[in-house]
Amino acid sequence: MKKYSTRALLTIALGCASYPAVGQAEAESFIHIGALLRAGAEACNTHSVRELDELRDQQRSAVADIGVNADDFDEIFDASYAKAKAMLTTLNQTEAAELCKELEEMPITKWR
Image (cartoon, rainbow, N blue to C red; front, side):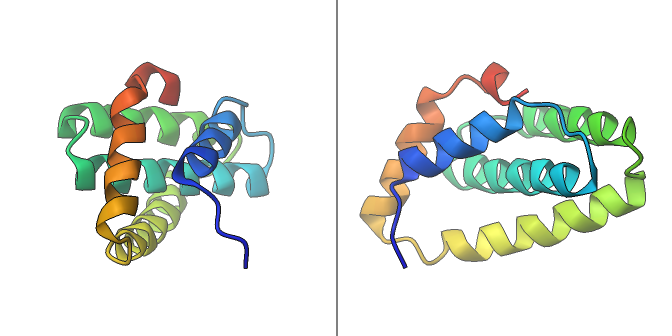
């Protein structure tokens, strides 16, 4: 399996997040991305809990507009978040530092 840099993965995630979700599959991808970004931001302490909660609420509203109810959103988000947190524990010190640096350089407004 090819290993991608943190920058590449975050660029892809943010690029995908910038397009409106149009169907169930796209909505789920959007939710997965949000969960991954939140887990990274929490691990690196780059954004406040308030900011991250606001983003989650905005994301929940955005996918509700295409038919994803709040319970389904929470189920998908929570499962993705747990997987992301587990993945983050496997990063070595260099990878973790790279991730944190990338997250620190990204304004939270770009995540919306």
